[in-house]
Length: 172
Image (tube, rainbow, N blue to C red; front, top):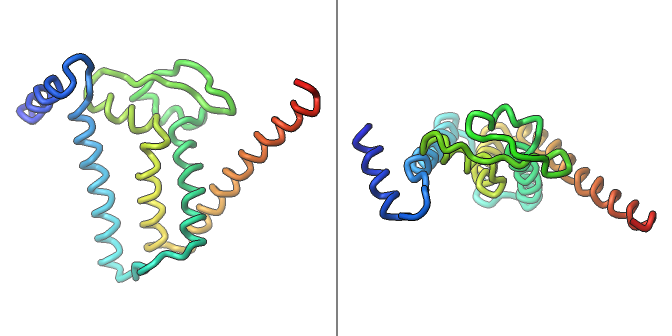
């Protein structure tokens, strides 16, 4: 294991000589994602759950909105900051119940995970994979959870739109 860490450090130094890039952390994250995807595929095979040949458009839209909301909730929400705390440090509020955090550099693993969990764009592929797997393995429960997340996302946009309209009406 130490040899792998040393090798990744050397590769990282030649890859980005003027900036620390946590390649070892990225490798660990890719391995974890591969394990997640393989576990979902194995669970579908073992349970005999049919994988749709072509997902319904409604499910794609539902999971897209739910993925957006859950990714932002995990990456930015103040309430989920205890999940990110081992890998990040609080820096400042980011508006609308969101936080800005800086990634810890204690190790390449913490750095890599910190980058992943503070980036809603990066988390989206994980969330979408989990929700898609859930749609195959437990479709009713997954759709119910996705409806909740989607309703929350739509509500967020309505709240922000209302706030903009209110300020415009008040002449702010």
